[in-house]
Length: 223
Image (cartoon, rainbow, N blue to C red; front, side, top):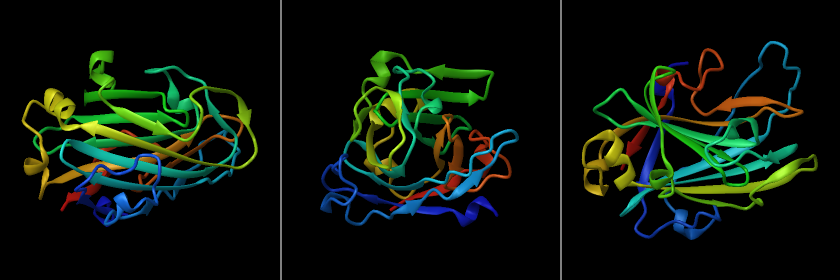
Protein backbone atom coordinates (compact mmCIF):
# COMPACT_ATOMS: atom_id res chain seq x y z
CA UNK A 1 0.00 0.00 0.00
CA UNK A 2 1.25 3.47 -0.89
CA UNK A 3 1.95 5.85 2.00
CA UNK A 4 -0.49 8.23 0.27
CA UNK A 5 -3.24 5.97 1.58
CA UNK A 6 -2.36 7.19 5.07
CA UNK A 7 -3.58 10.74 5.53
CA UNK A 8 -4.17 12.53 8.83
CA UNK A 9 -5.91 15.91 9.20
CA UNK A 10 -4.15 17.84 11.98
CA UNK A 11 -6.77 20.22 13.38
CA UNK A 12 -6.02 23.48 15.19
CA UNK A 13 -6.58 23.49 18.96
CA UNK A 14 -7.82 26.90 20.21
CA UNK A 15 -7.07 25.76 23.78
CA UNK A 16 -4.41 23.32 24.96
CA UNK A 17 -5.83 19.78 24.74
CA UNK A 18 -5.95 17.65 27.90
CA UNK A 19 -2.90 15.38 27.64
CA UNK A 20 -4.44 12.98 30.16
CA UNK A 21 -7.80 12.38 28.47
CA UNK A 22 -8.25 11.44 24.82
CA UNK A 23 -12.03 11.82 25.22
CA UNK A 24 -11.87 15.35 26.60
CA UNK A 25 -13.85 18.03 24.74
CA UNK A 26 -10.53 19.80 24.24
CA UNK A 27 -9.74 17.18 21.58
CA UNK A 28 -12.96 17.91 19.66
CA UNK A 29 -12.22 18.17 15.97
CA UNK A 30 -9.21 15.85 16.13
CA UNK A 31 -9.28 12.72 14.01
CA UNK A 32 -8.80 9.43 15.81
CA UNK A 33 -6.70 6.80 14.04
CA UNK A 34 -5.57 3.27 14.85
CA UNK A 35 -2.16 1.61 14.76
CA UNK A 36 -3.04 -1.68 13.09
CA UNK A 37 -0.16 -2.79 10.84
CA UNK A 38 1.70 -5.52 12.77
CA UNK A 39 5.02 -7.12 11.85
CA UNK A 40 6.23 -10.56 12.88
CA UNK A 41 9.98 -10.99 13.02
CA UNK A 42 11.85 -14.28 12.54
CA UNK A 43 12.29 -16.02 15.87
CA UNK A 44 9.59 -13.93 17.55
CA UNK A 45 6.63 -16.23 18.21
CA UNK A 46 4.20 -13.73 19.71
CA UNK A 47 0.87 -12.98 18.12
CA UNK A 48 -0.06 -10.37 20.69
CA UNK A 49 -1.87 -7.47 18.97
CA UNK A 50 -2.61 -4.61 21.38
CA UNK A 51 -5.15 -1.96 20.37
CA UNK A 52 -3.65 1.53 20.05
CA UNK A 53 -5.38 4.78 19.05
CA UNK A 54 -4.02 8.30 18.67
CA UNK A 55 -4.98 11.93 18.07
CA UNK A 56 -2.80 14.88 16.96
CA UNK A 57 -3.50 18.64 17.06
CA UNK A 58 -1.48 21.85 16.77
CA UNK A 59 -1.97 24.97 18.82
CA UNK A 60 -0.59 28.36 19.77
CA UNK A 61 2.74 27.06 21.05
CA UNK A 62 3.29 23.61 19.57
CA UNK A 63 2.08 20.11 18.72
CA UNK A 64 -0.09 17.89 20.87
CA UNK A 65 -0.41 14.13 20.59
CA UNK A 66 -2.17 11.54 22.71
CA UNK A 67 -2.24 7.74 22.62
CA UNK A 68 -4.75 5.34 24.13
CA UNK A 69 -3.46 1.78 24.54
CA UNK A 70 -5.30 -1.39 25.56
CA UNK A 71 -2.28 -3.40 26.64
CA UNK A 72 -0.92 -6.31 28.67
CA UNK A 73 2.58 -7.38 29.75
CA UNK A 74 3.40 -3.75 30.57
CA UNK A 75 6.95 -2.73 31.57
CA UNK A 76 8.46 0.76 31.85
CA UNK A 77 11.91 0.40 33.35
CA UNK A 78 14.34 2.34 31.16
CA UNK A 79 15.52 5.84 32.16
CA UNK A 80 15.20 9.09 30.24
CA UNK A 81 17.00 8.92 26.90
CA UNK A 82 17.45 5.17 27.44
CA UNK A 83 16.27 2.20 25.35
CA UNK A 84 12.60 2.85 26.02
CA UNK A 85 11.61 1.03 22.81
CA UNK A 86 12.24 -2.19 24.74
CA UNK A 87 9.54 -1.19 27.22
CA UNK A 88 5.83 -0.92 26.47
CA UNK A 89 6.27 1.97 24.08
CA UNK A 90 4.51 4.33 21.67
CA UNK A 91 6.44 6.38 19.13
CA UNK A 92 6.00 9.41 16.87
CA UNK A 93 8.40 10.05 13.98
CA UNK A 94 7.84 13.16 11.86
CA UNK A 95 9.51 15.14 9.09
CA UNK A 96 9.00 18.89 8.61
CA UNK A 97 9.05 20.17 4.99
CA UNK A 98 12.24 21.71 3.67
CA UNK A 99 14.76 19.14 4.86
CA UNK A 100 15.23 15.40 4.66
CA UNK A 101 15.91 15.18 8.40
CA UNK A 102 13.27 13.98 10.84
CA UNK A 103 12.50 13.88 14.55
CA UNK A 104 11.86 10.75 16.59
CA UNK A 105 10.05 10.62 19.92
CA UNK A 106 9.93 7.20 21.62
CA UNK A 107 7.85 7.14 24.83
CA UNK A 108 7.58 4.36 27.40
CA UNK A 109 4.27 3.73 29.16
CA UNK A 110 5.53 5.48 32.29
CA UNK A 111 6.54 8.66 30.46
CA UNK A 112 10.31 8.36 30.09
CA UNK A 113 11.36 8.99 26.51
CA UNK A 114 14.14 9.05 23.94
CA UNK A 115 14.26 11.72 21.25
CA UNK A 116 16.55 12.24 18.25
CA UNK A 117 16.95 14.60 15.34
CA UNK A 118 18.16 12.42 12.47
CA UNK A 119 19.77 13.69 9.27
CA UNK A 120 21.08 10.34 8.09
CA UNK A 121 20.15 7.19 9.99
CA UNK A 122 23.06 5.57 11.86
CA UNK A 123 25.45 8.19 10.46
CA UNK A 124 24.34 11.70 11.28
CA UNK A 125 21.99 12.32 14.20
CA UNK A 126 21.66 14.23 17.44
CA UNK A 127 20.36 12.82 20.73
CA UNK A 128 18.69 15.86 22.21
CA UNK A 129 20.40 17.08 25.41
CA UNK A 130 18.45 17.66 28.62
CA UNK A 131 18.29 21.43 28.13
CA UNK A 132 16.26 20.73 24.98
CA UNK A 133 14.33 17.53 25.65
CA UNK A 134 13.13 18.94 28.99
CA UNK A 135 10.93 21.32 26.98
CA UNK A 136 8.81 18.35 25.86
CA UNK A 137 5.93 17.69 28.24
CA UNK A 138 4.75 14.11 28.82
CA UNK A 139 1.65 13.07 30.76
CA UNK A 140 1.14 9.35 31.41
CA UNK A 141 -1.54 7.46 33.30
CA UNK A 142 1.03 4.83 34.37
CA UNK A 143 3.61 5.18 37.12
CA UNK A 144 7.02 6.26 35.88
CA UNK A 145 9.02 3.05 36.40
CA UNK A 146 7.52 -0.43 36.18
CA UNK A 147 10.19 -3.07 36.66
CA UNK A 148 7.97 -6.12 37.13
CA UNK A 149 5.85 -6.89 34.10
CA UNK A 150 2.13 -6.28 34.63
CA UNK A 151 0.52 -9.24 32.90
CA UNK A 152 -3.11 -8.25 33.48
CA UNK A 153 -4.92 -6.01 30.98
CA UNK A 154 -4.10 -2.32 31.31
CA UNK A 155 -5.71 0.69 29.69
CA UNK A 156 -3.16 3.48 29.58
CA UNK A 157 -2.87 6.90 27.99
CA UNK A 158 0.16 8.97 27.15
CA UNK A 159 0.05 12.57 25.96
CA UNK A 160 2.89 14.77 24.71
CA UNK A 161 3.39 18.46 23.96
CA UNK A 162 6.24 19.41 21.60
CA UNK A 163 6.98 23.17 21.42
CA UNK A 164 7.58 24.94 18.12
CA UNK A 165 10.64 26.59 19.65
CA UNK A 166 12.36 23.21 19.97
CA UNK A 167 11.49 22.21 16.41
CA UNK A 168 12.70 25.56 15.07
CA UNK A 169 16.07 25.18 16.78
CA UNK A 170 16.89 21.90 15.05
CA UNK A 171 15.10 22.44 11.76
CA UNK A 172 16.81 25.79 11.31
CA UNK A 173 13.74 27.80 10.31
CA UNK A 174 10.95 29.59 12.14
CA UNK A 175 8.06 27.27 12.97
CA UNK A 176 4.84 28.57 14.49
CA UNK A 177 1.09 28.17 14.07
CA UNK A 178 1.07 30.49 11.04
CA UNK A 179 3.85 28.71 9.15
CA UNK A 180 2.44 25.27 9.99
CA UNK A 181 -1.10 25.96 8.78
CA UNK A 182 -1.59 24.45 5.33
CA UNK A 183 1.64 22.47 5.40
CA UNK A 184 1.92 18.74 4.77
CA UNK A 185 4.39 16.95 7.03
CA UNK A 186 5.40 13.31 6.77
CA UNK A 187 5.16 11.03 9.77
CA UNK A 188 4.40 7.66 11.27
CA UNK A 189 3.25 6.37 14.64
CA UNK A 190 4.13 3.11 16.30
CA UNK A 191 3.41 0.72 19.15
CA UNK A 192 6.10 -1.71 20.20
CA UNK A 193 7.60 -3.75 23.02
CA UNK A 194 10.41 -6.26 23.40
CA UNK A 195 9.05 -8.17 26.39
CA UNK A 196 7.59 -11.62 27.00
CA UNK A 197 5.18 -10.85 24.15
CA UNK A 198 7.18 -8.65 21.75
CA UNK A 199 5.34 -6.79 19.02
CA UNK A 200 5.87 -4.03 16.47
CA UNK A 201 3.07 -2.08 14.79
CA UNK A 202 2.68 1.08 12.71
CA UNK A 203 -0.06 3.42 11.50
CA UNK A 204 1.31 3.80 7.95
CA UNK A 205 2.19 0.43 6.52
CA UNK A 206 5.80 -0.45 5.72
CA UNK A 207 7.11 -3.32 3.56
CA UNK A 208 9.29 -4.54 6.44
CA UNK A 209 9.58 -3.81 10.15
CA UNK A 210 11.88 -0.79 10.04
CA UNK A 211 10.48 2.27 11.79
CA UNK A 212 13.00 4.61 10.12
CA UNK A 213 11.72 4.09 6.57
CA UNK A 214 10.78 7.74 6.01
CA UNK A 215 9.73 7.06 2.41
CA UNK A 216 6.83 5.14 3.92
CA UNK A 217 5.78 7.83 6.38
CA UNK A 218 2.16 8.88 6.06
CA UNK A 219 0.93 12.45 5.47
CA UNK A 220 0.07 14.94 8.22
CA UNK A 221 -2.13 17.66 6.73
CA UNK A 222 -2.29 20.79 8.90
CA UNK A 223 -5.73 22.37 8.59
